[in-house]
Image 1 (tube, rainbow, N blue to C red):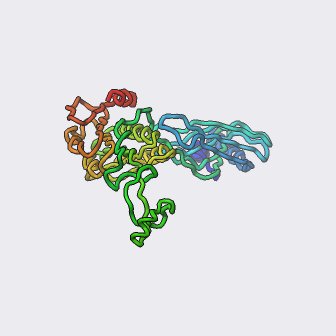
Image 2: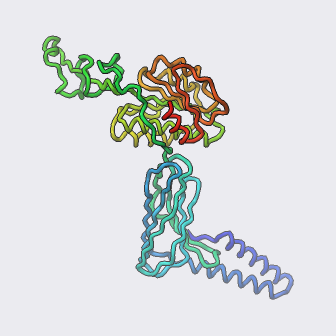
Image 3: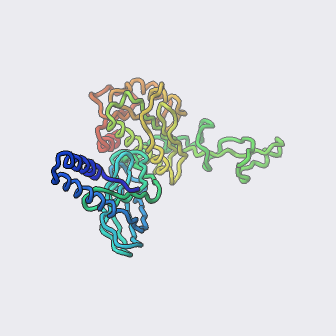
Length: 375
């Protein structure tokens, strides 16, 4: 696409006005200036008229990064035609545009240019398409061509290292108390009818012969409690977007640390579930990916209401703004969990701590780590 820049359009309009004024008033000087201006614009158009023969590739490294950590675009340009000067690149990064200077390219030359991508805000950042711009020395005209397709950069929450909650390390060592315990291979819980997909090695042949129906042993990981993390995401509670970002960072830190110990993790807001993992080596990555897209959203349910919908047992972590919820309301669900922790983000004042609820007030992730160690 070939276009005149704002400067080129202004020069053209001024030349037309000057020429008309010189002709009307009978003065040759304005007309001469007008002709010079039109010649300059015409020369600019001729400068960008030949299309360069380029091979262009852009990579993003890394594709997943913590908020605030560096991510770069790597632009590789190879010139297959005659020498090219006056090149620059424009790469879209979400709502912003990154301007990249490209050196002059002789025939057969190859250049690699690295540039920073914005990572200050969490989310899925659409990168591209990349546009190469060739302009004349006076910037009166330019030629724009798109290369490649859009890619996605995941800017994930920041995390801090925490220790796993002690509750549940020896939980239900004699076996689970309900069918809601996570399925696994460790402990016999009960016999049930066979369903498609069950492993044949779990069939209990004696019971199957007695009942005339295939029966399988239901095994559970009884010693692995779930860490349930409830994030209050109602928009009226988070007037400052930075406070909500800190809350998501806190929730991510707790989730990643529990997942690192291969504990089941459940993350939810008042609007519903965000992620649910059963304990495995890839859980931390899945949790961070899921929390990347969390945003404030209207919901009729508070954090306490959401906590009541969580299956009983294990640990409950509630992340909320400093003014809500009342720790006393959190205590109303205390008897359903082994341990309850309330993380308050940037509270305005201290709050009474009810029995059985651990309260951590934080203004930064460092505060979270310190409060977590002291709980």
